[in-house]
Amino acid sequence: MSHGHLRQDSEDFLNSDYNKRYQPDKLCRGKRLWRLIREMGSGGWETGTKAVGGFSEEPLICKRFGARGDEQHDGPPALYYAKMEDYKEQHPTLQPIQYTEEWLTAHPDVVQICQTIPECRRPLCEEIGSAICYKNEKEWVALEEKVRPLDLVHKYEWGDEVHSYPVQGKINVYLSDRELARMSIDIRTGYGTGNLPEVCKAMAEAKEKLEKIIPSDLPVEYVQLYYCDSDSDLMNADSSGTKNSACELHSSFKPQGRPFKEGFNPPPSERIW
Figure 1 (cartoon, helix red, strand yellow):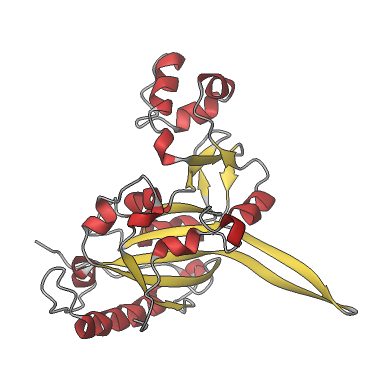
Figure 2 (tube, one colour):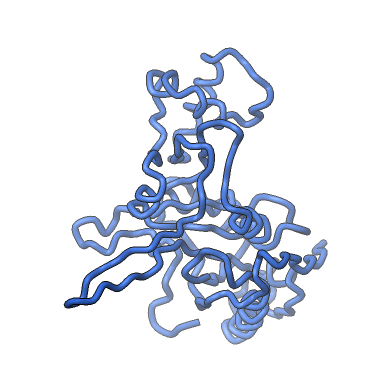
């Protein structure tokens, strides 16, 4: 953990332009890490319709979704994010859902993916009413059959030379004492006591393990590792804004694991009673 200001994860989502510094300019998607890796490594996200949602401009919403799933098999809570403008360049139909009856009526595929149990069909008016109930999730949708992880190449000129560089997203991984224990990492802080030397030691061990597990060919710029004082920082995040984030950056790294195309077999989690 760095000395001085400990950067919280919400700061990653704020535009660095001083005129917009409190405006999130990223889109995120939350899933537990092993599931997220499998989705990204397999090419992205699709729903069987011409609409793919699951993205949000609200990081605390994504964190809450990132903590859901099978704790025993799906890995630690994680969140994938990328810059809005870059993602819209790759998928031009990507846009925020407008939670109005008029807009949703005109986009029935979006209404369908906004249902908690989409296979249980109801009259359209009821489904629209259900979709509007989730407006606080600030969900974004692409009116396409599949959405890929961000993976662009941007070019720029320097004198007479043309250079290029990759434009990709990033992954945040969130670890509490409980999640560290699931990774078979011993941490003696007592629940949520914040014993900094022990936390730093455990997080360094987690970084070393995750560097070797996360596939090196995953389309991400890098992975960031955050320590959260307790599981409530993930499960009960306040969705009203980013100011209540309580997870602080430990380190970042470039994945070095076996390429996904060669097979992805993450280790099982320790059972925590």
